[in-house]
Image (cartoon, rainbow, N blue to C red):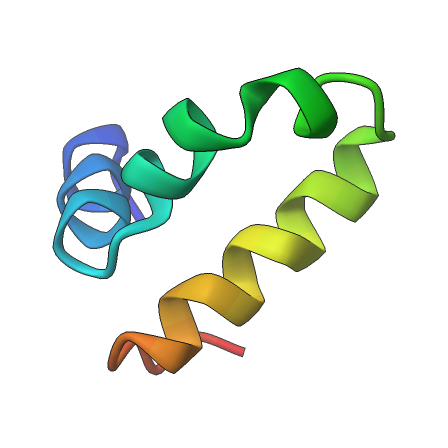
Length: 50
């Protein structure tokens, strides 16, 4: 996936909004945990990556 496609995916499926809203918690977690959280949020909002 290109960077542009990744950005569009995160934007469309509310991943970026999630990171902005919960930055205070997410930045304290490991990168793997943050990615897992993003995957869950995006899937709940129609994303199909797994």
